[in-house]
Image 1 (tube, rainbow, N blue to C red):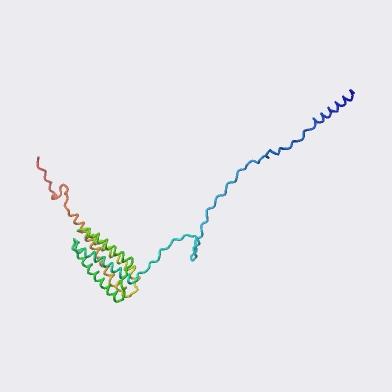
Image 2: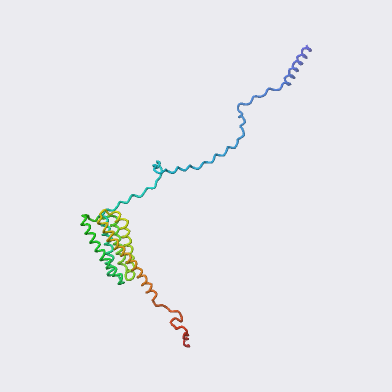
Length: 260
């Protein structure tokens, strides 16, 4: 009985020792634990944006592409007809006649009055010639923007001249004559001669009106210089306080003041 117990104890002890000598099996990883993440690496810098490519220059004769912005061109100016040219000439004549008639009554300078008389006479004759030509051609003067503009300018010029007197009136009138004749010459050269269809109208403009207008302009410019010289002389002769010793003869002593 005792021997059987000892054998049992020995068997248990050997079993226990054998269990302690074997290593425990590796534990399986928990399904809830997240796997280790790799260390983050720095992202490469974005590539630099290339500059936008310039559109190719359009070749001559090619149509502009859709969506391209183009500068609108100014509308072509419509040439004046012979009837419209006559209306402009009539308005220019009337402007200078009205201004010159006013100068014959208000001008101070005799030269200005004489010039205004010539202007009135010549432009009245020019109006008669133009009316005769219109009758010969069987046409009637027709207004345009240019003739209407001259009519408005005439009213403004007359009102401005009426507000002036004396030398101021003379200078303003002559300055107006210079501007009027410059504008008329420009109209004859750039509008009337290139656009006139009638040979008779071109001849009237080129051989009659233009030489007369050019002479009026030169006379007005000469008259303006004469008025400027006369005005400067009048200003220089005005009396004023003389400096000490003025009026004494050279080599003489200035008289001493009387004793007090």
